[in-house]
Image 1: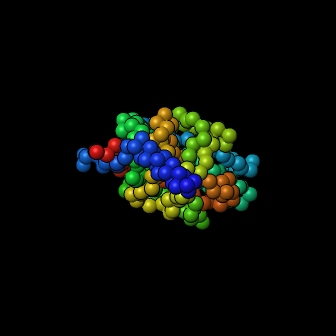
Image 2: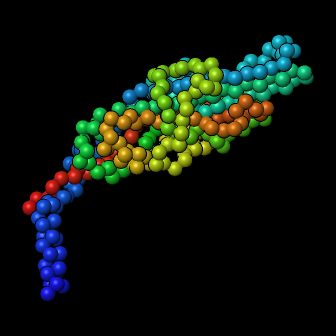
Image 3: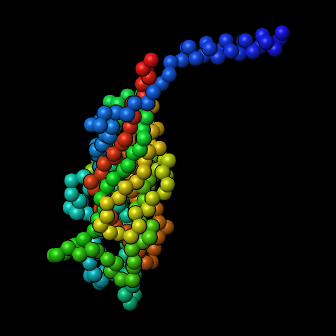
Length: 257
């Protein structure tokens, strides 16, 4: 008797749960709306130069090697990476390091317009990279001496604090923007300098933005090499641009009875 009563209660509870919860369906957006593209809202490049030399180097008139400058960037482009320059001639030792941090923030209004009842199927960050070039015709900038392109080229990172728009010179390392690992994304190094179109999967990061539409979509590119300010000519100088994030989505709604 007790067993039959318990079975009846379990069945009754199951019926109540089923009747109180309407089935939910995932409906793909129309062909014209199943993909949205986020565009950059603002970009910035931070640059720092550190140097040191011996007193007799005042007679050394060797020009500085080229690094990324504001004039090298076109609209929507940023500079990223670093360059060491070490010169040792007779009794003169000159050592310089340039560091470039790149920042991009995307306009998330198209994502907010979709509402929270949205399932993100995929999100792909796309951008174009090109190494710094100079001269006529433009040639890729290489090391002034024995340096090779660093294998620790700009990596995708996440800004940990606010930053300003546009080109910005800083006076000390402490003035550089603190960054951390880009959430939910494998560490991505751009590799050796070249002219390439890049794609990075940022699906999990964008999925996190849907329930928190007020959260900004910011990213950074920088080199975290321990070769900064060393007696070598390592470098990695990239110019990045043409940023976009293509998002495939599905709308979540109640199924028709």
